[in-house]
Image (cartoon, rainbow, N blue to C red; front, side, top):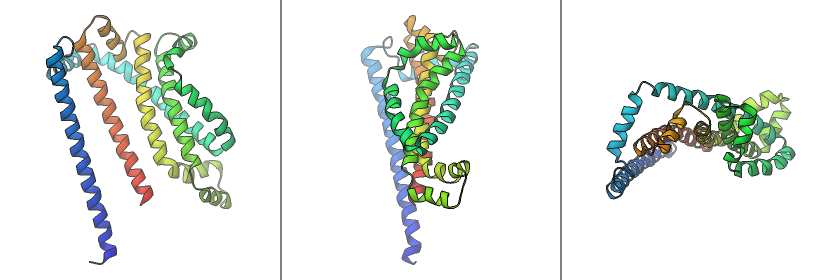
Length: 265
């Protein structure tokens, strides 16, 4: 077999071995965490830290309760609305700031300072502007998730090779055509990384919003369980959120790796 024909096969085998090793490491990490969890439950006692089996059983009971679908729907409705706003607005603003270097250089330190502020300090302002209800939860989710999307998108556009933009000008492409055919495809791996961070932070913001001003939702269930000292419910809901967030993050991470691998091939 010629050497040039064997190279793709060798590269594919190398990628397959790497993916297999990554899957094995992930499985070992999960087993190790469950073992530590079980050991902690044995040492601290079931009242302080329920065991994995007890937590899963409690979660199954919670999800089987007739009120749970209403709480889950309230959280999902607020979260996906906030996520759509964060991703769409963050992408548009990030593209605009990345294309206009001076505006980006002026805005970036402001956004970084806002990102560093504990968002809980803004909650009275959010309540004053949006009142109690789903609007406040959506707004709180957006202010958590939009800034990482803007920053990642802006820096991705800045790192695009200048020759691509010169080619767009030479072909007399419009702004929309340049963004759709050159800027977004070239910056897509970094944009997906921003989406991954924005997803997690939007979920966090939405849950925090529910914990402070809501009568429904998973965040509301969490804060009520904490108020009554119901450790089993707290651990069960926390496990549910961790599993969902980890699965979504893993899917976005796999997409990110695939895009980067394609960009470098």
